[in-house]
Length: 251
Image (cartoon, rainbow, N blue to C red; front, side, top):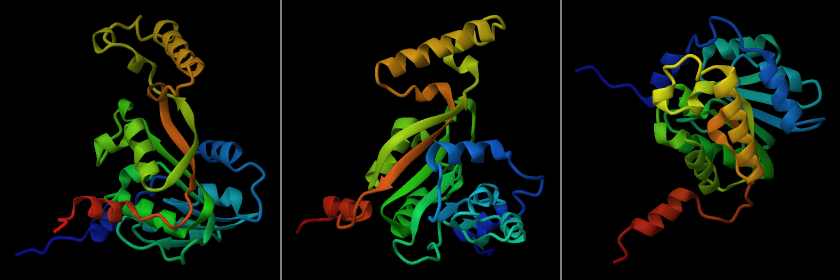
């Protein structure tokens, strides 16, 4: 009988040559730094899902940076750029660092690829200093991104996921608009005029502005969301410990 594969083996196989076709644009990385890490200097920074090191390359001149990724070719690219990096699966293996090692952890559009995002979040929290910053982004499911855990990555659910894992969310910033037709009822999307920038595009801007005027974040209008959060101080039980205490037989 053929033996099953471990999560680590599956991830390594699926992502081994993930970056074979090239690199992502630096625009996204530069925006992340300008928005969440302006004038960042003298910090210890970990990127979980570092890919080929595009973001860390922009930070390494003035900071101590290190990355982890499940993609062997991504890590090879990092090493060629002189970036310290580890090829490992952060959703099934412990991060290879002591507790409270980093001032900032960055995780961009990576959580939705993980087989165990809960374990990854616990490990990121462990190696982040108390009061340290987590910059974490996920795509809006509305535009069709395949999700391993679809409900988790809806805006309110993912926000609750981070808060339950003892991160305090400071703010959320969007990156680019979602396809404008997504603002329309499904039955209207088949009409070309309705999906034009004059109709759907204008409606999307009006709706987004109205939500912001009401003090709410119009998550459904955007391509992806980036959460800026800080680690809540030590001393609280993990979510798994709280769950066990709540559900175990009391005798």
